[in-house]
Length: 608
Ligand code: M6R
Image 1 (cartoon, protein in one colour):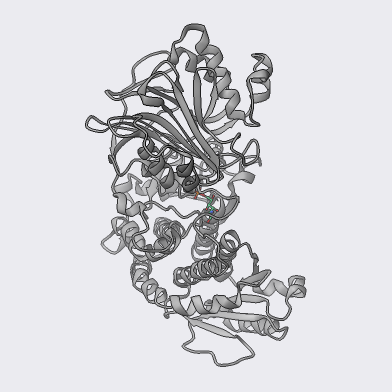
Image 2 (cartoon, helix red, strand yellow):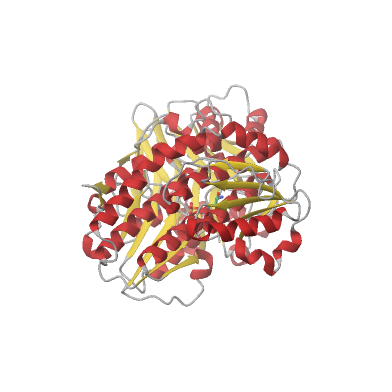
């Protein structure tokens, strides 16, 4: 939700900011803006516009010698999409960019009588007015920040310029993510994440919550709210700029779909020792898996659907009770967990606020929380008792693809480990399953070769108003993710149904030509599934069948058959996921949409 960047140093700031914003655009793309010290003197200029970062470029000066500024790309929360509501917001001596929500903006406006100073409908402008109010008292940036954050309730990552302090940027955050970096040859950066400045430096630190950060061309100072100096803990990014670029693909989403086999190999290899699951490199001891009575998986969106697959797999094979909770529901419900419950929190970004808050709640009941997270050192990773990082590299497309399959792979490995620890799985059984998992990247490559066939069949989907994904058991769980992929990027209403449930109501929606993606990979229920498919086919649905059959020529079953490589039933989820992702992607492209930046969405959901 919103991307922020700040830079001060030797380079022309406008280029650094706009290039950085274009890489942060996945966080929001309603409007964009920059603020900078004009001619590097004590004068702040602002350029901003409704629209995307490319639109911002067109309202900026061709040449701009400023070497210090801040930039923002917005996902609207308070106030509609307009240039007035775009960041940075300027009040008096202060220019402010903000990711997050100031919940008590109305109370602050009233308490400090700020109403007359506001022009926009945003909570952020209230933050700028409040900072300006305190700054006007003694012209001390840190003191103004300390006083302002003491008043503010909510989440925030602020980047601040004070007009009479050219070359300096100040920053502070609570909950909303912010990282910082410094290279003496280049300068100092803050940003929502490292992709914004990875082109310039790969060493960074996570800004601690409620630390006041002061950036200048000479370095970064960090101190707590009492003015005590803090020593930041620097880390090195383990990927480079190419990982954050399209690398010849038309969209990030397609690139990320193709990266999945490698991402799974990178993720599982360090967690396999002697053919068995092993999380010792993650610091997770065997004791963590012992005596677990039940498992709760908490996540949002695609990560939650990955949890659905993991849950079905663990419950069916190990007979351990597993509950999947939508994070935004879990956090306001009464958790039925205790010290014998294992809580697995799943998040690509590690910053989703509902998931983070659900984790915080779960920690009040159990010391066995483990997160599966892709972004290193993110809040969820830091706050869970244990973290197992997925090694998918940066996921830029808003629609999650590679993060999903690496999460599922990680959950399978955790399931094997739980099975061994509880005696529900023998070593031989665990070894067989690990071997099957290791073989999946190669099979996913085979499925990726069907790309043109999928592209062709989506011509039958682009005019659809509705689509249905049906399956039984694990196939139904993958169907949920398939439906989400289609709806979020093609804007076609799509629903997943347990195939046996259709005749209890939903089948009335099936009419001539309605696409039904039918997944039939679970052998124990294969015949039942085929009967359910015949039921929709008999009502003239356009059926795309995904199954392990070599070929299906029976027109009473399907219009198109996508045959996937024959692997054990449970493992077909990886192959099916790839096909569902390609169906979503090519339907979106076929409709002339941008799958990387679907309307109304943002990659990282840091507001409730
Ligand atoms: O970063 P997270 O995994 O916590 O994000 C969760 C969801 O917001 C995310 O998966 C979302 O549903 C994606 N748009 C799905 O493609």
